[in-house]
Figure (cartoon, rainbow, N blue to C red):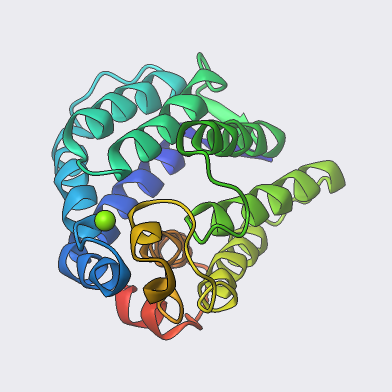
Length: 225
Ligand SMILES: [Mg+2]
């Protein structure tokens, strides 16, 4: 079961739509416990990606993701730039030269991105950051690759379910990393905007690839296309 470079490019383009559409909403969510810059920071970079993606030189998946990591690092501000830039860069390193990736290779890309984000930001599972969505998704992909799953639509839906579920399961936690940690207890009972973003992106991917899925967390329901 291979995933084509064209489908990865389509997922990136869909991500840019998700992020740009939620520029204000994701910043509003960040403002509940953080400094309110998350949506604007991310959208600034993804507007460049949306514009440049059709034009950039992309002979293979790794080259495309490396170029995107440079755009993110240059244009995404705040604490998100290094985190998202590292994610793209680490995924690029293990997809160099590939014009399609197997499920095992996709799991490796996501795994390397997660490891890089953990090293870059110093956050762990339970710190109420986007890693609380990404780490269980990574584990789901590893399990799917090990089991030789072939239904990519069902797997995508399952990953979106996991990320969406993380919005509610982490809602009552106090943030320990990222800007939200600076307000301590004020972050309890507010969703983490990074987790909402990952869940929304995966739910929008479902729609883009014809997989039926309804959002569960109210913030994701509000943010999806
Ligand atoms: Mg912020």
